[in-house]
Amino acid sequence: MITDSIANFITALQNASRAGKETVVVHRSSLKEAIAHTLKDAGYLSNISIKGKNDNKIEVELAYREGVSKIHGIKRISRPSKRVYYGVSDILPVRNGYGHLIISTPAGILTGADARKRKIGGEALFEIW
Image (cartoon, rainbow, N blue to C red; front, side, top):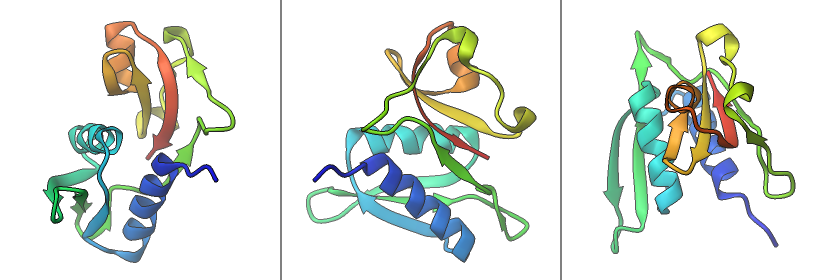
């Protein structure tokens, strides 16, 4: 049985934002932690903390502006069954610049704009707006 931990994480974020929840707690992995830090830098999360008995959980606080979540939608691009890789020229603005592409590059997890500035491509994980 193959599980997609990234899809589980972003689905938890999307469901929490639609339900008006302030925090989401998921199992910790270095990839999820890197994605959470990138989302915090992009303004979708307000705080990240490590919890649990053996620091095995990550708690993220969603960012809200005037009672409305900054996360309006998430679309998974690359999946375990179908990997999608973008070169620098393939990285385009999401939702006319109102969203972000989250991409896994050799330099780490970056937004599409950061990857374009650094002139590196990678695996397109998901879009968020």
